[in-house]
Length: 212
Image 1 (cartoon, rainbow, N blue to C red):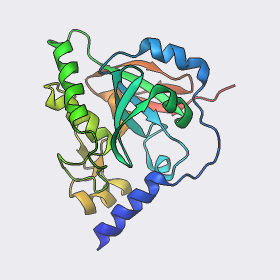
Image 2: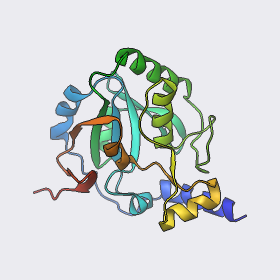
Image 3: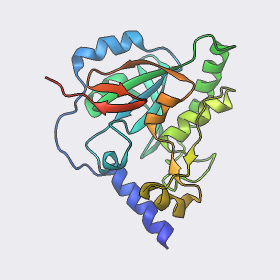
Image 4: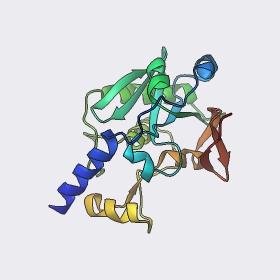
């Protein structure tokens, strides 16, 4: 019963907005992001208008994979789906781009297989329970598993057992603890290629940069 209530709470945190305003991503950076992005890049995003953002580690709350043609694939509330780069700039507040490390053997094949696996998951539901599953995914789990299934060692786990309140609450549901936070891509086998001007990086953490 407690597990069911906590899952419902996670659902509400994901879909409920606490701030009604325009997003913080600037359209002036749109073309820059288009030029930077390559197939297989991890695109980490921040939606700072939802309750979920209050519980995230810093101003990034979401992770996705860029598949080319100005589209990402990601696990969202309605399941695994595509989203255009244009829609990202309408809905999200922060953005960072990560790429598998330069010099990685069979890099092109890894990227191809990552995208292939990700596309096969289209339509699968979002993993609100946060438990291990191959039939439903939360956003960072989806990204992490797509690369791992392609043979890339990401240096990341889907769950981390820590002593904070969020981890202890989630442990009641999934028996493992906290889920992979998007900010942890800063401490992974991915290189940071770009971050939106309203993000700054310090000691492997993102923080929000005041914009003039």
